[in-house]
Amino acid sequence: MSGHAPVAIVTGAGGAIGGAICRTLANRSGHLVVATFRPGGNAPTVAAPGLTVQPLDVRDGGAVAELVDRVMREHGRIDVLVNNAGVCRWGDPDAWRHTFDVNLFGAVELSHAVTAPMRRRGAGSIVNISSQAARVPERGNAAYCAAKAALVMFTRVCALELADSGVRVNAVSPGPVDTAMLRRSARTAAQAAGCTEAEVLAGYAASTAARRLLAPEEIAAAVEFLISDAASGITGADIPVTLGATTW
Ligand SMILES: NC(=O)c1ccc[n+]([C@@H]2O[C@H](COP(=O)([O-])OP(=O)(O)OC[C@H]3O[C@@H](n4cnc5c(N)ncnc54)[C@H](O)[C@@H]3O)[C@@H](O)[C@H]2O)c1
Figure 1: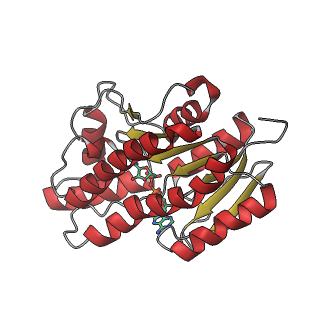
Figure 2: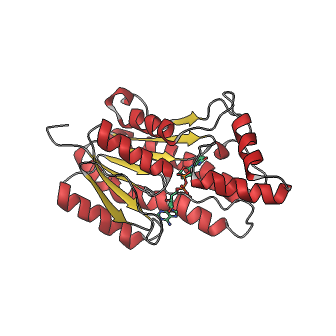
Figure 3: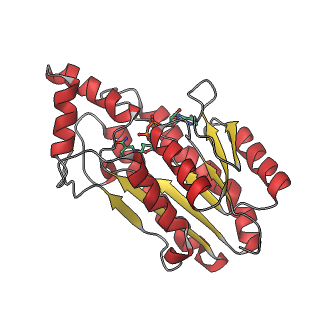
């Protein structure tokens, strides 16, 4: 990496998975991390040397361009982008536009913004956090399943178009991870089914071959691998980190 610490932008860093990705990249793989979070949302609680925190609504194209310009001015490079920001409005049939705006168009906006500097350097790595829901249909969650499936195809097309420039683009598709998002979904599902949140969470755990929920750090480890030189041969991939789950 020519003597400079690699620079990573991670979106949605106020959530558990985003926080774990920031911690892993900053503490274990020596990245300067720009941890972004939704204005008005939870700010990241991660503190690590070389980690800075910035508000960013991924739906705001102007703010995205400004952030990328600022990172380029301050660090002169962007090595990694992790599109992790996401919303899951399970059981809300009006959620299509919001769900696509954050999960798909937010990632599109950021990917376009970092592509020019990455192309100029002839190197870079983008990881999109999709979901098992991209492959396994979930009742009551059409918008999320469709947006995450679109994100995987976006990943594959970007990988194809950027391969010549040395930029790799991959996805990670988690199964059920114990985070605020999963607990919110479990609460809504419990109300709909007339059971308890704990019972729904136990059902999510039982849907995996290992019969437990994933930890955010297990998703971060897959991201860390994909952006590392060890994964230099991998682009256009969608890595399932699901503990063998085949249903929700
Ligand atoms: N938890 C799971 O079981 C699970 C499973 C599969 C995929 N995922 C995906 O993993 C990612 C992280 O999810 P999580 O479980 O940590 O959820 P979370 O809700 O804890 O975190 C998501 C983060 O995205 C942020 N966000 C929402 N809208 C935003 C916007 N407009 N601009 C910027 N940030 C915004 C939120 O503020 C939040 O901090 C998401 O993309 C999610 O879809 C989660």
